[in-house]
Length: 113
Image (cartoon, rainbow, N blue to C red; front, side, top):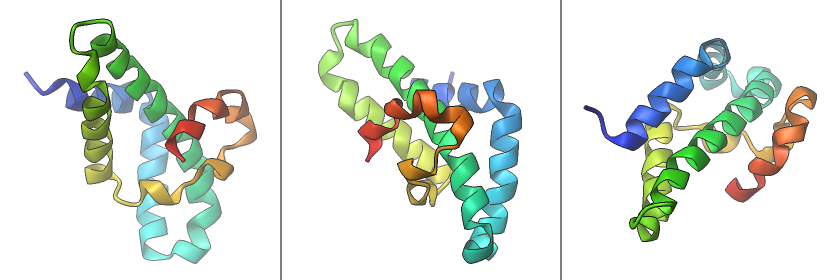
């Protein structure tokens, strides 16, 4: 059985397959030509960040309810380490790149920056 934070990350990808598939495609293009693909990268990446933040919140909420609350930040850090293994440039997305469709959930991202 995988470690919980890895499992949550995988579940986020499965649950939002179309979004992550789109981001994977744009991520690869951005990696090859950042100037050309920056807008698309940041637009789709903003939506990805929102989903990842929601997933992090769910993951940490489980430990915060238990006797392991003091380890919640470490768990969140491990989750984001896992994200960065798959998307090393995820921090280049930035909160200002959230699309209009995702604006209502934008406040969940503010904790990241």
